Structures are given as C-alpha cells and as structure tokens.
Length: 183
Image (tube, rainbow, N blue to C red):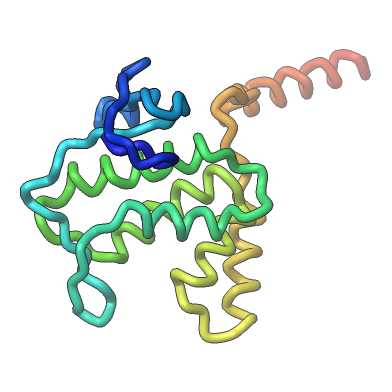
C-alpha cells in the first residue's frame, strides 16, 4: 500500500479488525520509510453494482460517500456523532441490499434516511426533509416541522410507565379510594 505521506510503498500492518458490521476490514499500517501511521479499509468489490433510479428516471451508480455527505450536511452543528452517521449509512445499505438486487429507487433511500434521522435528531431530519421532499413553500415546511415536533422522542432506554390497561385500572382504583375517603 502506498504511504499517503511520503509515497513509498513499503509498509507493515500493525492492527487489523472487522469494521462496518463485518462488511470491511480496517487496517492500521506503518510506513517503513517515514514511520508515519495510516488507516486503510478493505471492502468486497460488488460485482453487481446497485443503480439508483432518480425521480427523473435517470440511473446513477449507488455512491456511499454521496449518501454520507447528505447526512453530514443535515447534521451540521448538531449533536450527532460520526459513529451515529456511519450506523445510519450501514442501516440504509443493509436495507437496500435486503430489498433490492440491482435497481433501487432514490425515494427508498430518502425515506429510509428520513426515518433514521427522525429517530436520531429532529432538526437534522427537518433539514434533510427540506431538501429531499422539495417543499413548494415555507408553509409546507412548517406543517412538516409541526408534525415532527408533536411526535414523542424515541429513547430506547426509556421504559413505558403506563400502558392503556394499567392507566384504566389505576384510575378506577383511585376513584374507589376517593369514594372510600369521602365516607
């Protein structure tokens, strides 16, 4: 592998580990000429290239970097880490490869990205939606933002305090106690 710093192609691998959910191998290398370290990734080359069918009907090759770039723009100056962004990209790609063999509509990618961003950061979701959904005017954007604002946050660590049956039985119990207290 050619060193990105000095251009020499004599290096040694210091560390190798699985990355991106087993889809890639991350290698730390050290150049033997300048002793600087750098990281490389190895991925399986796709023999059947996924094509994205755009809204206008044109077809372009799927580009992971383009997807990541769009997500990064939506998350600019938001509390979303690079690790979270990579997880979102992996979720989207997993969904693409699970549901499509060769051609995937851009709407599928956009909808999947929107769903992931809505769960991660609502402001980033609105930013992404403002470009992806191509709102005709500010009113549409405001309506969409209000809908998102009213959706409760999804926190996987948060336990449900009451379900509908618990609420009904507890309100009935409190009514019984109030009636007994009045007697």
